[in-house]
Image (cartoon, rainbow, N blue to C red; front, side, top):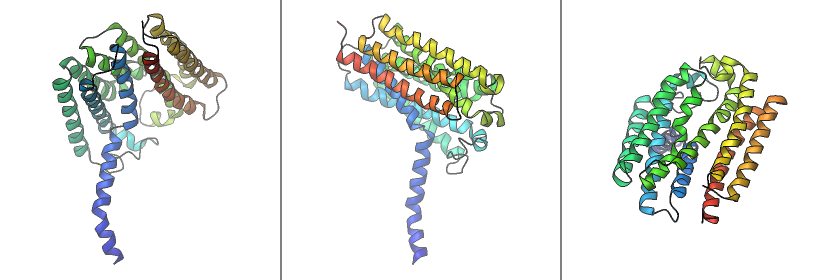
Length: 304
C-alpha cells in the first residue's frame, strides 16, 4: 500500500519539480527588477497614465525576453556552475533539467516575447530587447565573461537597457532621458557585481573566470567599488539636474547613494567576512528603492 502511494504521487511530484526547474532558470528575481526599471522608463516617458494597451504587452514581452536571456546563461554556464559552490545546485548541473529542454524553453520564451513586442508594441522595442538578449547571453556570457576582468563593466550595458525599452515602448523613439536611466544602471552594475565577486573569488578562480578580484586582487577591487559608488552618486544627481525629477527623488537618491558609499567605505577600510556580501545585498535594495522613488516622484510631484 505504501509503495502504491509513492507510485501514484510520483507523476505530480515530478511535474512540480520540472515546473520549479524551468522557473528557476529564468532568474525570476532578476527579471522582476529589470521589469521594474522598464516600468519606470514607461512612466517617465509619458505625462499621465500609461495606456494599458501598451503597458501589458510591453511588460510581458520584456519579461519573456529577459527570462530567455537568463535561461541561455544557465545553459552556457552549466559546466562551470557544476563546479562553483554558489551555483552547483542549479537545475542543469544537478540534473533536474536537460540542456536540450532548456534550449527549447529559452527559444520559446524568446520568440514569444519578440512577437508580442513586435506585433503589439512596436518593432523598435522588439529589436532593442532582442539586442539586449544577444548582448547578455552571447556577448557577455559566451565571450566577455571568459575573456576580460572588465567583463561586467562592458557587458553590464545589456542589463542596463530595460528603462530604454520601457521608454521606446511608449514613445517609439530613443530619448536622452531614457539613456540617462540606462547610464544610472550601467554605473551601478560594477560595484554591485564586484562585491559578489569578492565574496566568491575562490569559486571564480577555480573555474578560470577572470573576475576582477581574481586578476587584480581583492584590495584593487575594493578600491574600484569605492570609486564607482562616488561616480554613481554623481550620475544619480543627473535626473534631478536635467529636470527629469523633483526634490523627492533628489532626497531619496542622496540618502541611498550615501548608504551605498558607506558600505563601500567599510568594505575597503574596515571589512569583516560578511561585508562584501552585505554590500552586494544592499546594492539590490539600492537600485530597487532608487527606481521606486523615481516612480513616486513622477506621480506625486508631476513636472509643471
